[in-house]
Image (cartoon, rainbow over all chains, first blue to last red; front, top):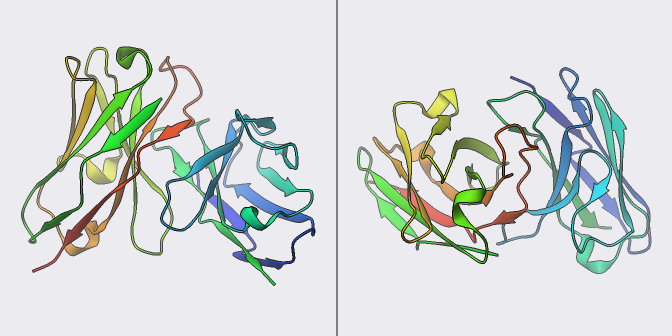
Length: 108
Length: 121
């Protein structure tokens, strides 16, 4: 099973700041990694797939990069609605599909 | 595209629960459906996948023997049954749409609203 480790667990930032979230895989997942955003009381929303492709309707301030075992989600300038929990997920080697433990982006 | 799940459930330990996921807005048999759960305050956990076309399923090892996923093509609905419930099964259960091919990228582009299952004596 591929283990995804996200860091940091919590990121305290202000609106307008740049957010950099990390996801590290226990073995290579090639480029087969996605990022999701989840707000309280809601289901996750797909943001990025295949490392760097924005899903439909996702603003350009969200970008993804990386390959192999190290991946990054960057939010270039935080909007108030971006404060949420973010998860990475791999589909390179499954079952099982696996998720990271999440990074909470909170208002400083 | 919509995935609409059944309502919250409260069950006693040892009981079973069935959660439904009614889909609309796309061709039901063309897309795989996954189930993912989230315990209170915790992360996301993949449970398994069902092929709405042929009904084939694959479960996470942790749930094998205790979870059954089925589908009804006449109503475009997918079901998940969890047996022998224990307190650790208290979670929000989500259905989510996957790709059109088993060999596609299994990301989840649409999600149900979630169903809270509470297991308590």
